[in-house]
Structures are given as C-alpha cells and as structure tokens.
Image 1 (tube, one colour):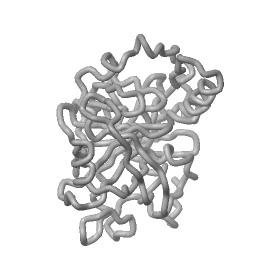
Image 2 (cartoon, rainbow, N blue to C red):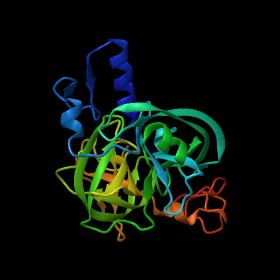
Image 3 (cartoon, rainbow, N blue to C red):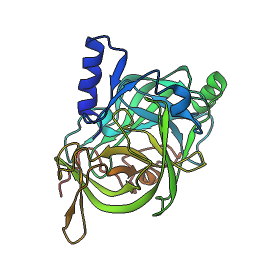
Image 4 (cartoon, helix red, strand yellow):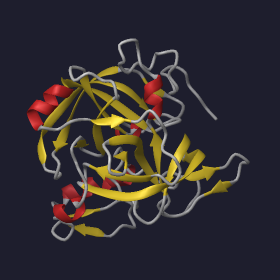
Length: 291
C-alpha cells in the first residue's frame, strides 16, 4: 500500500513547515512545488469527477444506470480508510468525511461530504466506497462536475489506461500489462489484480485510491492501490505476485490496481449499492476470509 510511510512523511513535512514535500516511497526524490507545477503535472488530463482526500485520492462515481437524483458515491482504497484487518470487511456505518472537488483543469472548486461508509475492505480488493449527502445533480449544479461511470467489465490485457490523482493533481498513462491471480502484500491479499506496464505509471504516495480510467474516456475500470518499493517479496509496500502454480514473483517498480466491476454485483432492487445482496461478489462484513 502506498500510504503508510507517505503519511509519516507528510506529518514530518508539516512539523518543519517545509516548502518541499517528500514523495513516497522513501527512495523518491524531494519534489519542488515550483518545479513540479500544476500545469506540468496536469497536462492532458481531465480532472472532472476526481477528488482529493486528506491522505489519498478518489473519484465521484456512478453506475451506468444511476439516477441524477441518487446520492453520489466516492470511490477510494480501503487502506485510505484504515489498515483494515485482513479477511475483514467493514460494515456500513455513519461517517463524517469531506472531499475536495476538482474541475477540469485540476483546480479545487469546493467540497462534498460523506454521510455513510458503504464498504471498506483490503481483502480480495482494496476498496472504500462512501455515500455523499449530495446527489449527482447537486454536484453538477454546484461545481459543473459530473461523476465518472463505473465499468461493468474488467479491463483487458493491453488496454490503455490513465491513473488520475486528486491528491497530487497529476495523471499517469500506461496499459494493463497482465492480470495477477493473487497479489500478496504483508498480511493482505488481492484477487485478479491488474499490473501496469512500464514506464508510465510509477505511482507514488497520495495516489492511493485514484481511479483507473479507460484511456480517453470517463469510465472507471479499476482503483489504483500499490507499488513494489524496493524489490522485496510479499512485504508491506512490496507486493508479490502468486501464480496459479504457486510461483512467487516480485520486482521493484511494479505497480498494481484492483478491479471495481464487482460493485455491479452488489446492488439492491433500486439499483443502489448493497453489500448484503445475495449476488454480491465482494467479501461481506461478518464473513471473515483467509487464503
């Protein structure tokens, strides 16, 4: 997960009131905020629907048949909520969390507010899903920002993608290089993870939870979550791939996203997200899982 050391570095930077921000992983160079300008980082990317969290990135998302009057949802990583216990999914619960809304060029134009956490897990996928107080039409009217649409299908190998971060206001472009049956990181594991091609998507701390879009579209096909920092195997910040035959592979700089198409299997009769739906393919609260 590209978060834990990043948070410590952010806290350290705040302590010293520095004009520089250290990028996670720790081997990353110091970024000069003047050198790494907004215009340079945001070039050619559309930030409508992208949000910034205090510690991560995220996006305002909808199903392809959501109503404009439905309360909007924000998608991010489970580890952007907390380091959720392996094999555990968080139950739906009341929360209070706000997100900065970006416009097309990446400027912050306001905030939206979560009223419930709908789902959170770091097993099978690394996903956090919030329900906002605001509806999709409220957000459109207030900020001229429309939601991104969740894909019903997983992306194919070689499909071109864009990873767009609200925290850093920057994007990355690459392709899906392979589908990994099992990805392990510390005590966590993820199923059918998506490995990025290189170069292009060398994600850093703060990009956790960024939507992965089919290139040139506003369709979310996955959520960005981790990168191997040092080349170590199966440790936190150093995920490893487990092949069907048990072969273990890890390499420094290999980065990954997690599928989001499972969300369509978790809906009630009204078309709203409901992890209790019998058809839901996500780990359910109270149904602990190991592997």
